[in-house]
Structure formats: C-alpha cells, structure tokens
Image (tube, one colour):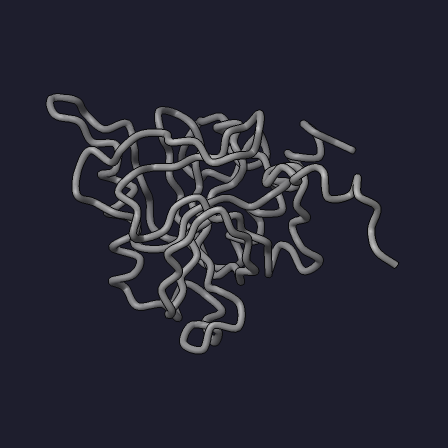
Length: 204
C-alpha cells in the first residue's frame, strides 16, 4: 500500500527526525556534514536541518575522515561529567562523529551506519566537545576494527591535528585542547550519556 502524499511532504530534520539506530551505542546512525574533500566547513542549520556554510577553512587543512553528528544526541551535563580532569559544561550540540571509510565518499548530507571504536576527549573554550571515532559498517577494510587500538596511529594523529588546528587564527591562541584518545568502552558511555542528555532536553 503506497504512503499518502502527505508522508513525502516534509524532510525529517537530521538531528531530531532520524533514528539513532537499534544497536546504539555500539552501532549508530551518523549524519555526515563534511567530507575529506571539503575546504569549506558546513554545519547543519539547527532550525531547518539544511546544510549551511559555516565558514571557509582558513588554512589548507581538510578533515581526514567523514565528519558529522549522531542524531538524537545532546552534549549536556552527563557528557560533560565524563570529561576527565576538566570542570566543563556540554556544548549543547549533537555529539560529533568521525567515520573512517576505505572507499572515498565525496558527498555530504547523507546518513550511514557506523560502528563506534573510540573517541577524542576535546575541550573547546571550556565546553566538552568529544569527537567519537567510528568505522563505516560493512566496510571491506575497516569492518574488522572493534576498538581504537585496531586503527593505525597515523589515523588518530591526523584527526587530532585537524581538530587542534582547524580554528587557528594568526595572533590568536587556540581554545582547543585534546587529551589521549580513548577506546570503545568509554566511547559507548559518551554516546549513552548524550542519548540521556537528549531525552532530558528534547524528550518525546
């Protein structure tokens, strides 16, 4: 039986209208905003859900992986409390995710399934801004990765370098600090915390 015409009238908001996935926090839906080919930073507009040009990248640095966020997550007090060694607050955004894929994906504004393997504990201007690291589910090269230790060190180094430098401006000190990468167990706790923070902030 076909859906009524009204069903196709509205596009779901990528933050609030897309399911996180039945196997979260291990495997999550990721909405991709930026690809490794982008020299412009795009960001989902919180009101409309469409991709908005946030800013051109100041330097030649480009993201080393697919980059976006996990739908129906929110970085609030629970996520902030997991940031070891810091007295911070959540950044009030959806939880960011970097997705590694062997085959180049050069198109943003897509959704995909990603297996969580670790994360980077990033603090930006006093706010918890974790970057979850995941691999594309069913990827023929990376699908066997189950933890951060299964990834080459250079992959983590490139991610850290990108996030440490992508906001750099001449004569200004960076407000970003990134600790040691953490593994799957902690990453899943961060995802779970962000899901609970979302329910508290935007509950059904």
